[in-house]
Length: 304
Image: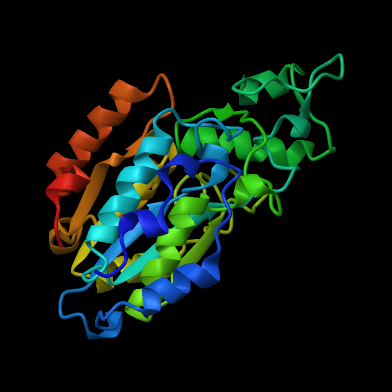
């Protein structure tokens, strides 16, 4: 290509609020490349980028994932080297309001205090009055906790406020954004952005569905996209939570179609786990590899 990686990406400004994106300049660089439109690709390759957002970035994020800055550098380098063969990019974005069941403000204890981040709240805790829904949504909160524990075998974790809609923390990381739009201009296509986590009564780690939802919403846009591509590459944050949940949901949906599940590759050096989940995350991805035939590779080992 005529454009160098350094003309697009300033690695010193990855996960930095000092970065300015200058998208018109990036689009001009992309349009200057002589690359066929994505619509002409004979082999269709999809990148599914999960939650590459400021609030998950080291040094600036409210829910920072250790290793995320280096992940962005490796991911943008992989995107750059494969621009001519990368057909489409779908990005998921966490998008939350202040009042959500997993944020501290939703709950109060007997003294009127909100829980600290990473507090675990169980159905039995609420039955005993240890925690109460501060907004009066007692029955609906109880219903969620009950079904989360019964159906998903999980407990509610209170997270730091993150990816609040309209805040800079909810934005895609700036250097990744630049490569995203360089690709769009160079390939005459448009990125697809998928917003998730807007239901105040539920958590939604995965890109396909919430942890529990009585309406049983399923994002078929993502599932249909996966089925339409010859190869699907997955990266993002955090590997232990939103990436793992997204991969699990996709594989569960296509569980009877090994031909589709075997198209999926995890870019293991373009994602990182939340601290404390390193071993369990590695074990769970390995189990998925054995069960569904997915591939787990380093980005440096894959040339499209």
